[in-house]
Length: 224
Image: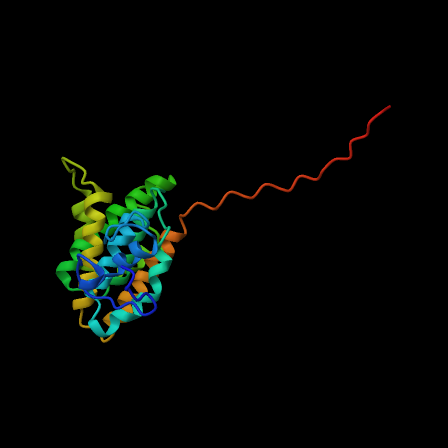
């Protein structure tokens, strides 16, 4: 991979077997992190990596090069705080819900409410206490919000695995929905979505431990 020109990375859709076949956002991240060539490197939180792959694939060919400078910013973002998955999912849905098709609105509204319940439990808040940003986008799609509240209030036999199943599917639905929405600037919206997902993940990275204070040598007096 010595011939890989990282000064101006050329991104393309999908998974690539080697740099000679092209590269996606996360494959370049794996290279920069010194990991084996992969679009699922360990240097980035799994959900954030999924957001990056989805944005890479759904951005147009003309707009994808704009993503390249963001690649280094995802390296090392691997927080394990349980807030990360529902919060990153919420940020993606907040971007998508007002502009995607009605069918997607119903799906995303359900995922948003489920994630908000998880956040409320983590924060010790009432189950129906929704964060202001999520409440605002739900109010912008009243029909979908009403249906989602009814759906999530029903007793379920099994609770889906939000982190491993619901969140990745919701993120993909949000990103694809924006790319197909009747809006004049889908690439700009996807770029901002990725920026916000990166910022949200970074916010949960533990602060580095403070460096120990230098020890001042004490004057030792010897008594003769």
